[in-house]
Image 1 (tube, rainbow, N blue to C red):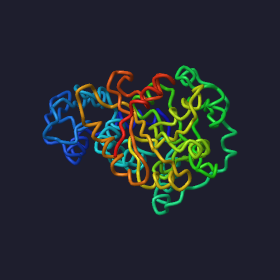
Image 2 (cartoon, rainbow, N blue to C red; image 1 turned 120 degrees about the vertical axis):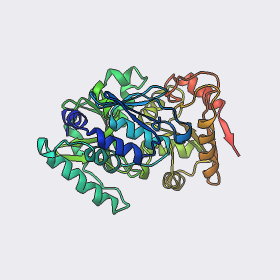
Image 3 (tube, rainbow, N blue to C red; image 1 turned 45 degrees about the vertical axis):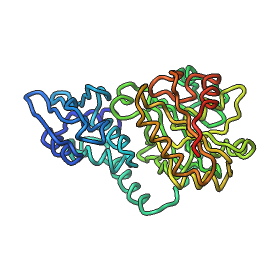
Image 4 (cartoon, rainbow, N blue to C red; image 1 turned 30 degrees about the horizontal axis):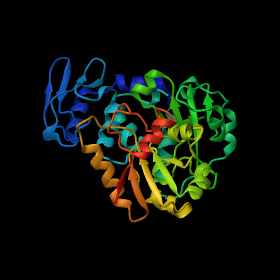
Length: 353
């Protein structure tokens, strides 16, 4: 399935089915006009009673617009916002693609339906087992070394990209990010979209599809980068947990900072990931370095990070980065503004007892 397939899926969304979906997701009020639906901003509010009536679904473009926080969203992006707001672990296939296909009149006969069915079979097979599938590393040879401007401008060096085997897909216009387990076995490949439409409407990061096969894996059963940073974590006795792979590569690119980083590939961590870290590295301190998600004067995000640390601080000392003074912009990773800013954020981190 390619971008044109996704566009056609969106174009053929049934408005009546959208109304049913919104009700299932907890929207309390739905107002319908000739041009759009108006409902509660459930995209970023998990308490419907506090959600304003500023989420619009436009019938002509089949796009959502949240006029208070989220902005323009395709149905795919709307569902991601919904799940992430509620800290719901979701699977791209079951909880997003399948849901959207059920409210669209798009026919799989109109596209490469084989790719879809292969993905479907793999999902249900994967769901019934806990271990991750191992893929042949030779598949990475089909991609090229191409140090993209996007990541070079984000402070990632060529040497860091080489060390973590970052590649580029010419046909899909994506940065190729291989995921390895702690034993250096390939367990999945993610693509970072460089196409603006795909990034805004489908998602910035997605499993990569190669010749009808999706190289996806359960992100909750691994920690990105651990296979490369394990020795530094053991040596220094602490570990930084970031949200995204890019942050791990940024730390690798810093001149005077040991790379003791991993990425959870989401804005949360789970017991399996903590167990994996403790079993392989035994860090004395774990430092949560998630993206900035809170505006000045709010406390919800602080409370979330505090709760994560409190939940697991019987394993090790826990702390988290929290920007109080505007060193970061909204959605920035603590590593986005360079080594000096990162070190200052670490110095000011909140320690949870």
